[in-house]
Image 1: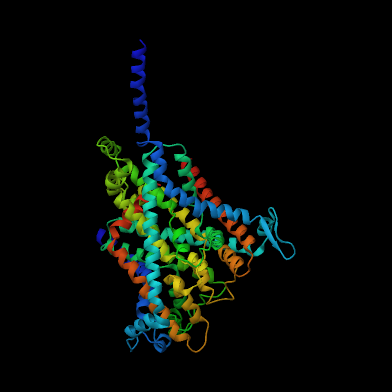
Image 2 (image 1 turned 135 degrees about the vertical axis):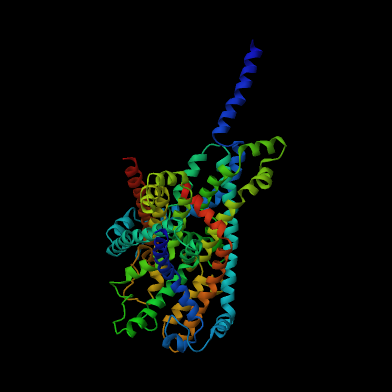
Length: 313
Length: 283
């Protein structure tokens, strides 16, 4: 009797393990740790630790008298009422709200056009639009800076030839738009490729069914392709949230062309940088960095939440 | 009907592509001009003098050939970072995809959440930690933070799930191969396209990185080309008699710095496309 139960136990144990294996992967726990350990060690050292350190630093303040003292949430209350930081956050939020839709609409239209089969030399178009992604943002900002320039920028030259006033790309009312143009130039192609790749994955029998129903190219794009792109669009929006709110390279480089327009608090990231490296306010800079990270995570989750809720209803 | 339609669309796309290629076209034109022509001739067409080769010569020899050094640094930082990051992601992604262990999903969730942590918010605390550890102003200050790619790990995990069938692992195990031998001799080959994708993206990210080296380095000999060009451009903007000469160095240097990555992208089209595909479709 006991032998048979033992046998049955032995027989059932591997099969249960088998079932588990089929649910996810194969192999033993200890080897699993060995595989993920190198990544996790570097991850903790280079990502978790600096974040924790920033959190720790942000709780202290440097005073003229008494040195560094514990300040609790003092830096955070200061940040939340700091008009320069709030202006910067407002500016990048405005930037996000205008630049990202423009960029994504261009990327979407380009991806649909290239996917439609109505274009000649579609591959060349795809490559031409994507190429700026390979250009470092430093070089992009420098190039556009010269193109915007009043001395020898071709736009000023053209306007001069036509007897028109030179466009004021680098004035305070145009600057945000000029920066938005640089960022759009850099990243439209990247987003287009993500959307294009997603379009390629849409099952083609859907198109055939639509064609049988008499749908034209535009109707197919609107009713089948765009809904199928929802997850890919979401990825684009999330990456754009992260990118917009940490805007730094472009304004920092344009600052040299228009120092009176772009001050050290033009974007939150520029502000954190100048606090830490010019103002020597390391603790406050840590609080600002930490808050900025929190804003980005919250904004990303808000985008996720809004979009998934809308798709459910 | 269809034909006319495609012509309209083609014209629209041509206009769009002109916009995206215009600054690069300008860069090529401007790099062929001497300083005087840069200011006096029309920006979007060649001037009378063709000074491209003397501009390249000046760029490469200015300040004891520091530009070549910056390019070398950029290549070194980005190849080492990308290689290391891709290897860590391959190992980790495979581990997360193919092994069951306590904390698997919790750890993976943590990494996934970290995709949203902005790199620039990390840079300042990382700088402060590194300056305590004496790592500031060393190549490690650029390479170490670039080794972590949460998005790369995510891509590799998705990729490993489909690309390495469990049956192959079981078969290799029955043949008596150790787990790491299975990874290096069997799985890694199947993972190769995914690894190349992560490699390419980390390479571009490190190559184009500006904020981190700007913070971490103040020795010009260690600059990558992005920080070097920005330094030259602020010299050019600072005014004074020699400003014009530096300006043409910035322009020609920008062109030279862009060429390798564009060449790499043209050669490796197949990979970046499939890579972006897996990121966008599966998420």
